[in-house]
Image 1 (cartoon, rainbow, N blue to C red):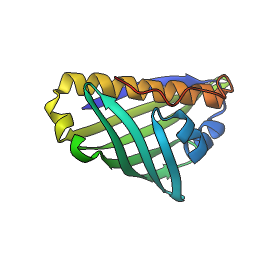
Image 2: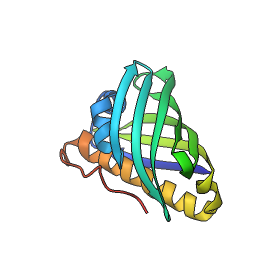
Image 3: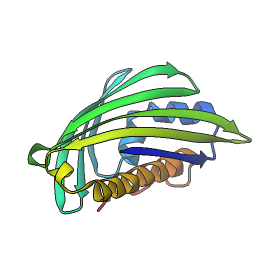
Amino acid sequence: MKLTEEIRIAAPREAVFAALNDADVLRRAIPGCEELEKVSDTELSAVVRAKVGPVRARFRGDVTLSDLNPPESYTLKGQGKGGAAGFARGEASVRLTEDGDGTLLHYDVNASVGGKLAQLGSRLVNNSARALAGEFFENFRKIVSGEGEDADADKEVS
């Protein structure tokens, strides 16, 4: 599945890039995130509870940052296992461009799922992935722009 979106954040590009590399900001922004640990400057480990259609799972996974070009862009590669629910893996390219007093965050995601998740059908999985990405970036936007210090990052996506 492929997702491409853009979101405007009312903060300077350097602040947005720094927040994209801040484990606490990411933990608060990721829907269903239970744990997020920075293993190194380019590696994160996470536990996320998610619901896709009728399938609920607790995913454990790793994310690696590469192609770092601060404060303009980077690539994230991740994979997670959700036990009987299956697995998910993906890659996202993130680009930041200045937009007046704010920043435009562009992302292109290419992801795949396997196991029970793959049996749900691409339409349901794509819709859930789109909703999850949208919720993450809205939470992220609120946190970085100072609108939502208490953004609700614990909701599940159905």
